[in-house]
Length: 335
Image 1 (cartoon, rainbow, N blue to C red):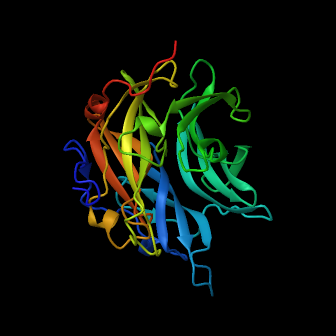
Image 2: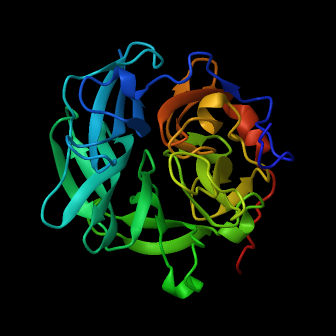
């Protein structure tokens, strides 16, 4: 049970893997303090993970270094990290790239990522064949991130979910929502619409955003999202003097033909911070942040998530049971 919201708990259909956490900084053969928010793919003979690696540069007391690490696994649980980071993007404007999401579209591998720059947070899309060389296809204007690509074109267009940061127009507060955009070529994006507002999510009062890439089901696009609740009385909950946020995972079902339409959503979270590695001893405790999914035998969805911004964990559930959690849409339909 969540220590912050006793009324919310992870539903019985979700099972955490007994090997959690499945990836920690101790497994990384180069400087590493935190490994989390990883993109994951299931290939024919292996699983691939590109993870965010935060570390303390030599001679510095604080976490000021970030790169992307690469790991492989025969089963998606036991991971072997490559000897060197696979990507570190930095120049006079860009300070770091992080939070990768991986998607295959028409046999091409794409990675969405976030960039911290001198003029704001940007979201990017890159293409790769070997997880070492990345061709950047597009970068958004500030401020935008949490981008995930749908695994196929819809009505001839590439489609992505994203989370802009409209602080000025939202009264100077963190009230951020899930949006959708479309592109003919993965370079030029537009035709943007609101998908889900934070006000539609009962367990969030601060912001929501896309989590892992959606998966196709007969009933719609099954889509995880993260949801944030802030309580200023929480105080110290990690390495920092104060961490007042609580992150949980939600699930919604989007229309197959027009994924701007929310067909249904679980009114309770599907993953709540409960396990020790999610609530205790982390950089930022009480954080569940899903960034990768794979489909396993028997119609099981495996969900990879960052826990406490510190380690990578895995949970599993029946796809049909997750679909069943999505009740009627909380979003008013417009004529």
